[in-house]
Length: 314
Image (tube, rainbow, N blue to C red):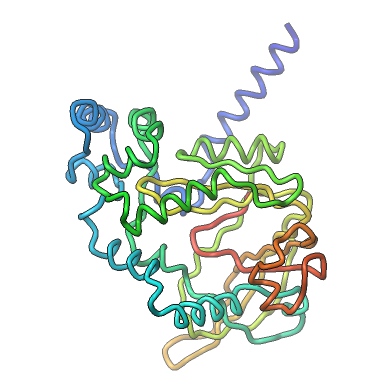
């Protein structure tokens, strides 16, 4: 009886905490816009037809083929290998701004942050599935889903969606890593709470908007987590998916940066999160960070700025 009472008290605390919990912006902006009646209508539509209508797709905040011109342009460019040298140069420039070591943050050094990811600014953000639609759409295999969402199985977007699923199912080779992919905010919170063994969850996220050529000056660095954290990354897919994984032997940092002044702006302090992997012995030798830092697996830490819309729980 006493054990049952303790369990009930713990559950009450969980419910109370989550009701007052402020979700990260990257999750809030992906919550389904549908009410139950609208979701039920779309569910019935899917049960009666092999494809979702473009009107329903738009209402649910999902991504459908032949709907977004920017989708076709972006993913055609992403999978077009004719200009491979330009792509490799762009990738290396991004990596040089992304990866660093702790010594980079020592002293008042000027740095350039990596520009916001193209996925976050060039295409609409897909929403999580409404609970009534989740059993229908999330249970489909990729071929069925792409057809339902008006995408050709040979389209560049289909190839990118396949890559996302492979990221969810593959193991990165890091010892003791725990990974999961989630199609709802509740599922993300459940993994964060159970994996970190914490009721009161905290997180860092990158919400900074800036000019890619804008210089910053390092002012102060704080370690906000060193004993366990969970990173969550939005994936490209017809509906919102986050791939979350533990990052063992890592530091979660919050770095104060001073935005340099220009004619139109005054200097301002901003906070930008970063992650430092202190043990890289399990990293693939071909990882681009080793080329940028001129190191090898197990030789020193690899740090990186947290991309836009990604977050780390601790």
